[in-house]
Length: 261
Length: 328
Image (cartoon, rainbow over all chains, first blue to last red; front, side, top):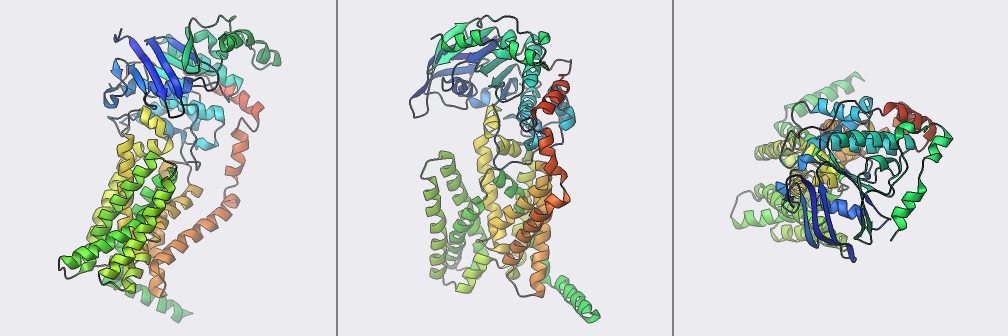
């Protein structure tokens, strides 16, 4: 079961942060190279689950392993294979930090506290990947929400992760950015990257997801193929027109995923 | 007018020729440059007042150094003051870091007890060790005019250590300050880095104490950073500008007190705060472009143009980002 081709293995995981159970007996196995969506309403535990996956939240019981290594054994975990994109980073007070500096921090791991030679070139490539190549020297806190998120994605991509974990990438960004994100993730997925993405609804990312896990009150209530949606290929959209912007939103499968309890 | 100018240069030459002022100026440059390095991290971690708290505890360390020196029969009890402050500051900083990490609701009360206990304990112990109120004032507000050669070496050594840690670990400490969760999720030794910041802050307090006194140590660490933030767009530049400003205001402030009998610590601090006030008021006039940028770029403020540019700009590069990880 715990073979090298298993990217993520969660066994009977429960999390309790003092206010009652947030996760309750979660079992989950994600084979390498798959794209998995974690769905659920607010407070269903999906963000807590991804935080537990990377050891940001301690388990009350159960185990989490990444590529065969238990996350609790922090130093043994192959962190350089894992890219994490949080929903957003709130620096308060607003911090003077350029996109280049933020992305550069993605190269650091427990074994490497300083970026190595050639890191500037890698920063440039990672920023080009998200369409921000010409903004490297600008302060991130002047960027829009969508642009800040792309900087965080570049920070995760710079280490060329085998496993990419993204928390709610579709919230608060414009539709063009959503479609571009979907295209970018599709390419990563085709190249074999394992993707775990936390979502309210599949929406623009529907076509690339091959498994959807729905959480409710800290438990898995549905696990399988994503709710079937009509083709949501970004290539057939006309996002610049009103019709394009509205006609391809698919409320029916999304509602079904959310409310079929 | 000419005589006034000549008098100025005479006094200036006398200042540079005085071994006492040479030592004091050297210490001022070292401390003024090193303190903002750690201050940059503290400001970003919202720990701007950490130095203040450590300073309070350092006073007890000074007093314990005095008592230990008196007990050991040392000829100069002053010589034990800075080592005492180093020990107490580190202990205080670790305690503060422990309380901060635990993050309990009564943490602020616990810190208040620590800070005021530090000051009160220091005042009582210095009295017991036979210190005068002049000694006490020296530690509260700085006593740079009494530094000896040992102080210079001690300060130089500790400043080198602070600069080495602060600059050498900058990428990792930046990652910690910018996004602690991501740093944790990258496997960075977050707790060790936090402890390193706390210990380095303690050392900074211990060496800054002679220049500005325990009540103003935090000003040397924080105010130059606040000024630099008005000027710099990157973290690296913020730190560099703060270091330059810190060293400059320390030297200029100390020099002013050679001409006018003012407290060096207070003069240096007021100089930095004055600089901040002037820049905060004039910056929008000097660099109006920073004001106009945000609405132009922010999709939330003008969504239509931003959406369009995003649509065209965000064409991911055709090559794959996936590949074998270069470090396993």
